[in-house]
Length: 322
Image (cartoon, rainbow, N blue to C red; front, side):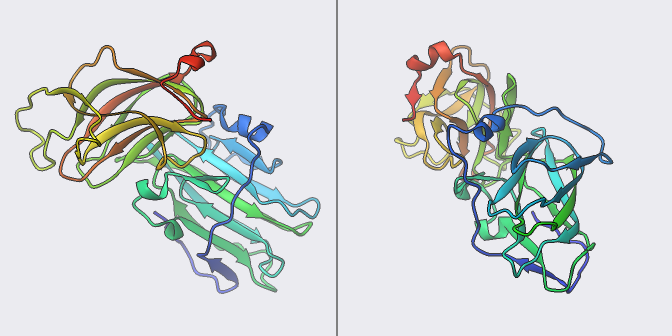
């Protein structure tokens, strides 16, 4: 969801074809995406943006000023806890539209032309997830505020500031998300609840590393969304549910990019089992994903354990992405 505060005529807003942050797969910037940043809780701290590509869990005021002409498209990637959304307010923009400068806020992450959440797994079309802003001629020192709220625990500010001396500032804080659906995780060993909340939503838990995935419990495709409190009978775990033409199932797999719609699948499961002791998948891909596909007819939920894979075990992965 994108929300706006205020109206200033001198600021040009664009909802257009997205641009992309390009990162080489062997660069240090990709490695930075795999590391959990230190979480900061103060919303009053001031942070200077020094790097073209950075990942942060900090809150507060972020300021950027171009110290030399630049042709690169840069990205400031925000990530927080699964039960939170990200609120971004523009505070100051001195980035000329006429020179090709632009500040874009993305609902999710974009990298090398791929998005998290994927187009198929987000309730908004892509054009509604990206809003871009720049300053018209003569509108320097714009101080009007606009507010953007992400749909999940990941958001991105892309910026292209080609002229030396141009600058912008934003304010970021994290707010509760009562119905998390898509979750981007950072690398710690944790357990996540994946649920569609009884709606026609595809939801996912995605990591940016090869992962060992354990499904600890599952209730997918068994409890009608309007009869959540009925008596439930365990069916056990069924496999290859998509091949059986079930409309609700859990996909476990991996890919080389952020887009989870084209996973290399290790397994597709459904059914109801409250405690699963032995189900485990090893995903030997740069991105590992558990994706809940839901028709809206059922209240689906799964308890998913994720931890980074042991490098020695990667040759024995259930799937390996080339």
